[in-house]
Image 1: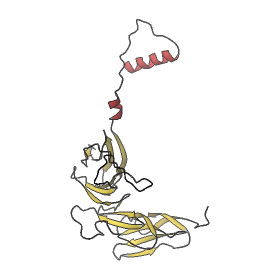
Image 2: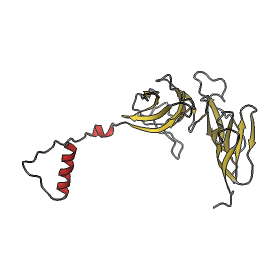
Image 3: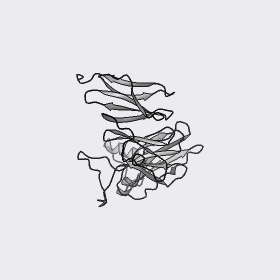
Image 4: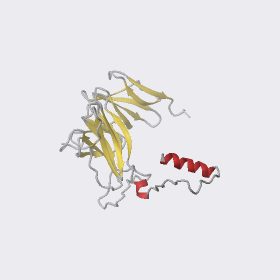
Length: 262
């Protein structure tokens, strides 16, 4: 009723009609600046393909955390424990097919000079890195590697990402990793060209990506079992946007002319 009365009074003012002096005036509540600035909002909702579970990123009073919920009641559970408003961004969330693993990126995107923002002017420096967590053990997350745009394998075991024109892969398992490749310090696939946009096959046995060669590009496919790279119908055109079929046996992609295009 109070909202109706306020709306009626507002319409009367717009229409130039003054309310009677003896008319009851509903109390007006003016929100504070703190109330305006401290509301929470969700971002980047993702869903598991083979489980009734969702995950999202929430910014609550500057605290950026990953939340998850599952059937039957979909009660929100905070998966990460970043409990300080330090201005460090959390983005690029994804979840495994079974809903057990989530990955995300911590740290701001780089500017045109390749600098990552440091809101607290940390003398130790800041980075943009890929992190992981398990939905079954909320409150624990761990760093995988420096990088961004991580692509989680459907089985949740690995994360692929492109950096410096090559393809990297790290395991999502918690604990020490032997060798620079497993630590994400050296490329997992290193071939000629500028390589990007890795895409896992649904069975997690192959990895497709784009290999650009200045005036044309290929769709490359890496087989994890044989450790061989093949090219899908190579030509002098630009091939992009590889997409796997559900059975992992076929690829669709976009082809457009090479250098003369445009």
